[in-house]
Amino acid sequence: MKVYILTDLEGATGVVREEQTRPGTQEYLEACRLLTGDVNAAVEGALKGGADEAYVLDGHGARGGFNLVIEELHPAAKYIMGGPRPCAIPFLERGFSAAFLVGYHAMAGTARAVLDHTMSTRVVYEVSVNGLKVGEIGIHALILGVFNIPVALVTGCKKAVEEAKSLLGDIEAVEVKEGLSRNSALLLPPGKTRPMIIEAAERALKRLGDFKPFKMEPPYTVEITFTHPVYADEAEKKPLAERVNDRTVKFAGEDLLRVFHAIGWY
Image 1 (cartoon, rainbow, N blue to C red):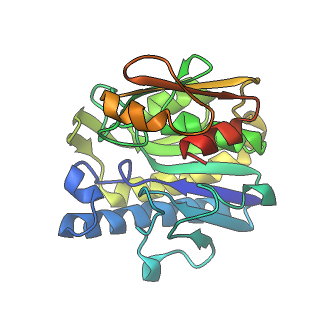
Image 2: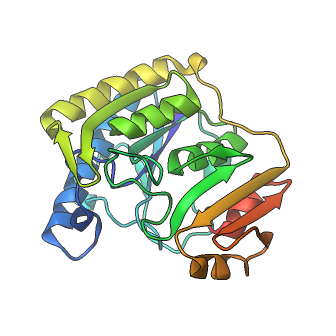
């Protein structure tokens, strides 16, 4: 059984502030260690659940992730790091039984969500696919769905977990913190969250029959509302793009991966 683990940084244990997500600070180095601990827990739980192979995508960062602490990584997994990449989520065609989303955050505009955003903190106001409002959890679940891979586990703040379950149903989820504001939270320590992630990952693989890939029927229309018209000015130059209004651009087509690739999400 093969498992694909996608990671982000904002939803990791102990991460609550912008400074923790930006390279070049001591806070960022601390956040990388915290994320690495969550990832190792997910790998360990996958092994306990019956996985014999795990790929981990270091997904935080616009130009390719390089956030995991290499010398501390679980030796049983393979890791995709750095960029640019041929696509945002490589190797899905190799076939995976399930996916885990570790360290994820809620979509832009979610009240009391820790570090909420959708793809870009200051550029994107809202995203919808075929009329359904989504964030990165939904976008990545749809990409995985093209390859018939169900999301079985999501970890992040309380609002991220709620968002995941509203889209994907009764998946396994681990709430590592509860947001008080965008940059403040009631935190659980790593000594608590890592055993929780191990147990949830193990349960997820033992419940695989309960999960279905997240899919939509074609044609696909993705509408992106930006925070400022200047970002829409740039977006409408891309393939498949059509300007809707001052801040909104839509991308449409029969092939979801081609649509997402035109935007820059796959």
